[in-house]
Image (cartoon, rainbow over all chains, first blue to last red; front, side, top):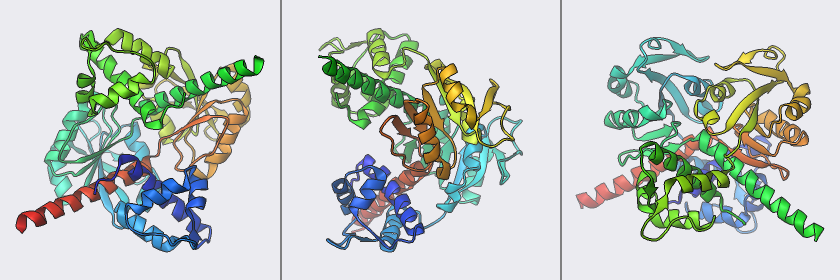
Length: 219
Length: 219
């Protein structure tokens, strides 16, 4: 089963939207309603969901509780994932204080840093302890950590990613602005600098279109 | 000119890779080399770049300095963008201290917060001032702010996005875990919770594949 990358992203968005609809007291939904909320085509949503079997019924739509359960199975969030963060800086602290993660099954339980002045400190509101890199292997095993977040500068990211894979980490969320190549773990990039550039690129395209349509109006 | 969303993201990656190659002392590159560095197919890279005219020459590849200039024009980073952040919390602080943004033309020059205890404080290493929301319109005009970053909880994000558009902001980087619908501004989402879910989804798919191939080996 080869799932295209954009589908994976949208599946996570569907899951959140379904949770919101349930919290509003609804019991069913349709690809139209999901499409309106997420600014997507209903046909796209039906196609995406069809990767995982038959969800909805023609005419009656989707049962929200069933759909949530199915999506949680698909997204593997019907369990708690133990997460460590390498790099006890600003990004790491922001993540440690993030409210949504724990609710959704991601539990940040350890920090690692090579900076000796940070070791032994407690990060964020929950006071998550910072360990030295030398304890990575032991702690990953002991605390059953499955996901590693890379929150170090780009120059250190590759080295850290290799260390994480070596101690058995199977999934990496990478905040460092560099492309990592690993075959033994899944990687998801959160690249904020690229998001800035994508935004201004879109702003530029819109400006060109606006100027063009102004020209037409003036002719 | 309608540019597909994934192309916009890759263009930003090409730009960073070109800058890295130049810093390594190289003067030309090829779609093969870019592809190896970015884990993309050379044909994909040639197709993406063709959206913006003829860049490379068959046989000789791309001149790196020319390519960088062209990509900077395309990405609109041949100028400085003034950026404000709404929400002086952890994410905002992490952004204020981010080294790469200013280098690439994004200058964070103001924070806004509705929390009176935060107003007047200085955020991050550069000491960026926090203003009250009531000063949004004046400061955006006075400081020539073009981009707004939303770093508030999901429940406040829609309200903030409408305020930003009302005062003339044309581009929004949204960190709140909610989908915003705006027609008068471009939006780019940085949705960390979705990235976590996308990661564990991919980890789940890989596990299924591994189990399947183990089964085959045992038969």
